[in-house]
Every structure is written in structure tokens, then in C-alpha cells.
Length: 90
Image 1 (cartoon, one colour):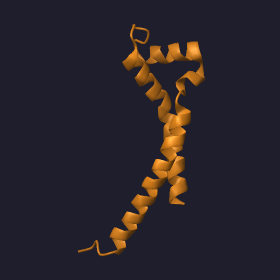
Image 2: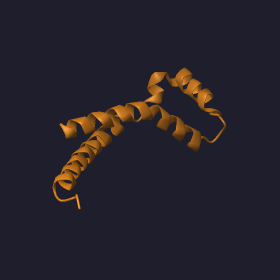
Image 3: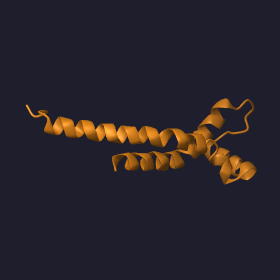
Image 4: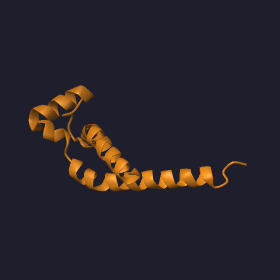
């Protein structure tokens, strides 16, 4: 259950943050001043590429992040259980 929860959390987090990552990357690597402000940049991307432009790179992210979060959640829960039940109290 922890692995599934972690994987779902990772996928949801990626879906929410991918547009911000795309925007950040575009602002950092631009060679001419096409993207000036955050909202202006969002408008340019939506106008030129549509909503799909904001989600470029989501596929590889969805392959990489959910397994990482699944392992993290399982490891965290195992360690927490071990420390609470295994003599972590003085």
C-alpha cells in the first residue's frame, strides 16, 4: 500500500509541477528575449503550442519519479515502524 501511495503521490506531483519546470527551463535557456514574465511566458507557450507545450517532458518524468517515491514511502514507513517499536524510546 505504501508503494502504491508513493507512486501515486509522485505522479500527481509531477503532473502539477511539470508546467512550472517547463516555464523555468524556457526562461533559463532562451537566447533572445522571447519570454519576459511568468504570465507572459505562459501565454506565449499556450498560444504557440497549446496545453501540450506546458507538459513537455511529462512522459519521462512519469517513468522516473513514481518508482522513486514508491521506494521512499516504503523505506520511510519501514524505518519509522522500526524506530518506534525497536527501542527508540530511551
